[in-house]
Image 1 (tube, rainbow, N blue to C red):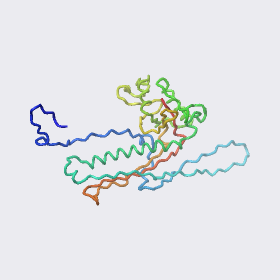
Image 2 (image 1 turned 120 degrees about the vertical axis):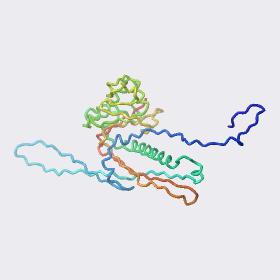
Image 3 (image 1 turned 45 degrees about the horizontal axis):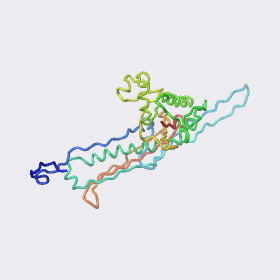
Image 4 (image 1 turned 90 degrees about the vertical axis):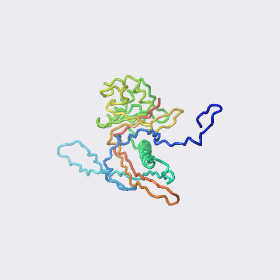
Length: 305
């Protein structure tokens, strides 16, 4: 739109006032990536290319039997099938900068696009893993009858999600902790990934007191969700969510980092001249894989507001 001109004055727009291109870009906003905080990467150094398989050895379960004097001892040969971490997933990006744009631009477009692609890659992997891991979580650590010992802790199930309100958001977190306790999950390195609305309930509840959050500064001041019942809380928009009975329901994942292993590698990043036009192509290929290696170290809550 041209600059307004007073009645009777000459309009010079287009003749004397040149168009300008700003040397600044509006930056994209990115969702938080939580995968590296909730998984271990013990085997990442062992992958090199798409399709690699890492064989993971596990400790067998030794049977303890009662002994009676003079009895013949049962001989046990401890064995447990190996687990396989298969690097069978991949994402790529492929974009071109025309030579004409390169001449006219004073911005490093390819560098900017590459950084944007890297962030988007992390988010795509996050969403895939946070959904794909759900079926492999121990059946004792989810559902309306969760708990290896008690079997009566309601963590929600399809059709009847657990309803979370500000008054009982702490109860839900503690219940997930109890389920993991009954599974003998270690207290250290526990995490819980929650949706933004659940984080909002925590911030508006009595948990805003710093002594409860386990932080030296109130979460109302610094916006950080500290530790609650041994969980380090993370907020993610990449949690699996579905419409169930007209309500948006979220699969909240929790546990210990030993439960999920993840490996990823950017195997190709290339910059090359385009063949069919004048320009430079930048492309990248990332391979990754994940595996639930200790199902009892993870739990899932099926929650809605």
